[in-house]
Length: 233
Image (cartoon, rainbow, N blue to C red; front, side, top):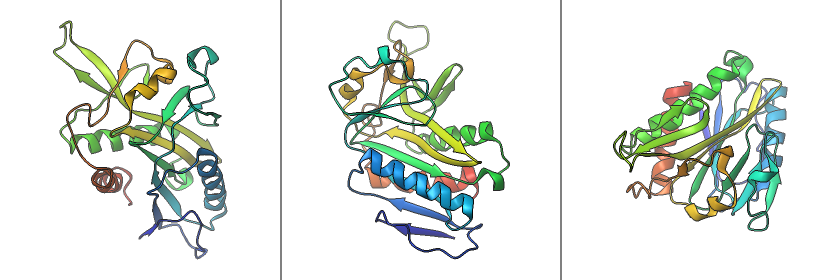
């Protein structure tokens, strides 16, 4: 059972929410601090059993976030966009228009209590979504996120660019934060940071790779692949 809502208010739910998952889609950019407050409230309600799990698809206005491992030296242009400290894992990341954020609030007590498996599922979610657009997304040892190889291996033109970031927080077995997938952001906006602490590789997007899918089209695939990976959507 899944529900859709466009607003930011949490509707009342029955006490038995174990088999429900709410999808929330926000069309207008959501301020970062507002999104964090909604996630915090929903995570607490999931723990209390008074609200269902939720996946929230949205975008933010241009901003940088600093994860728990952020190194100040990697914020190379601190005055470019607002910088928000956040409790998710990882380092500096950019969010902005043209990038689809997927905030995932799940109860891992009901899903095996395995954080590593949860992160692997997030990776698979993005990899399978990209595959629907004929893009091969890959993991890389020692690098968080999903990567795209470009050019022939061994050639001077070969490089690997990041197309999706992953940063999660788990509190009392409830997850929040999640993934960000570059659809058509201004890639120049990443220049104010060392994205996720990795400066020897670049960033890319669906449009940069020649795929002109709209955000609603990507949302449809994200929902389909979420159900396939996580078993409920």
